[in-house]
Length: 179
Image (cartoon, rainbow, N blue to C red; front, side, top):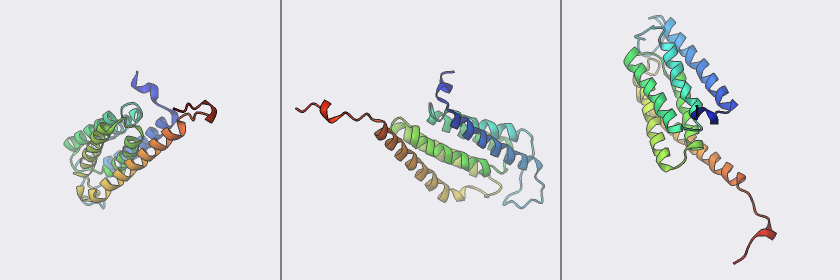
């Protein structure tokens, strides 16, 4: 596939780590008891939670070639999980996912319109993660998570600009043409 040509070993490692976290959070939901200490009762214990969570993190593989599509794909899958499973714990994998995608947005967005669409997608992803999250009891925590995502996007932009500056070839003094 054309989209996967830009995937590097670090992308596989990052995605693998997020897959492990998503699977563990999914297992916690499946095995949760009604007496567990959560802010809101977990409504579903379906084993389908695990593959849906894994599917939500797989777009990280596309972060170099299609970051905006990756963000919106993750947001769509997490949003679908809200409709499918109701109140469950999502923040344990969803917030790290949004933070990874926030940095990646700054690092790999090609222009301002991609940055804007990506930031909207990150907010949508965080809303989907937190709106019916049993551990946080809703989206009130977004007053902290959205600024963190913005800072991580800015860090990604800084790294992008710094890398581009360092990578630019410097013409030796003798070869410069003076007008």
